[in-house]
Length: 359
Image (cartoon, rainbow, N blue to C red; front, side, top):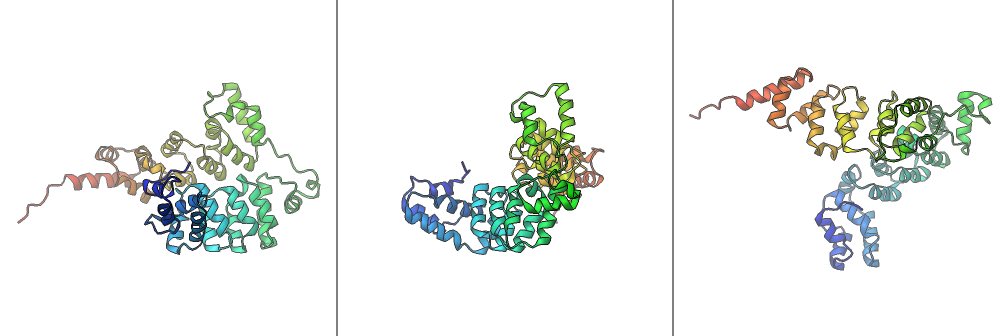
């Protein structure tokens, strides 16, 4: 179920009067851009045919000021973004916004990869995490007649080096020969264990509520994960539970660790632990401090402000939003970046400075 604001809900509720729903279908209700596209997405499935048709027409005529804002918003529900990408895949400007939005579903990107133009295909080809996380994106790019040989060769070479197989794709077979030699055409190099095989071996990894593995199992799991390809680690980051993610978050490959923090199963507790982690990779922390939903947790803001791996301008922005008690703590905390500590002291001095008497 999509989370809807009260104003959106009253205009899309099936029990609402048809004229009220029709107003939203005509895009006449003053809504923020993300709410506007969400309302239209819901109304194209309305019970009333005129409402459905009108909503479809309105979605195709939305002005740039609405689309440019809404399609970039990571808090818009994935089904909404996927629906719009299906309709805008051949419009490069909007397709690019949607493909760069991490909340857009991989399966929608795969559908776009089959029909988009060269410019959009280049954007898709540069999103290495999507290529490895959802192999259908690669398969559809290879089928797209708009994609030049150089782009496809680059994508396939990267995917082969990352452990993706796709034996049914001729361009992938050719890439294996380029990289590993003619003998790899029929017998590709050992791929290592797959995510599905690991979950089958360690059935607990499929259950978010499973207790921690026994010490012996933890050791063998770590050894098995080390033998996995990058592509399969990324799939395990998406499919596995918290224990699997804890191993993969420490992986030296940034694509794997970013796949963990972008997992749809990631919990608030894990996000907070990453924000507190002074050894976290820069790319992982960037995902955390760029997520508006996670920043609603005050503890995450405090943790990011204290973390020396967070860029100073970002930490200072969060510092300005903290309560006085935390600012006081930062002002005397020698374990935080000196720039943060200095700014905290200045904030306290300014707050406590005696006010000049008015003449």
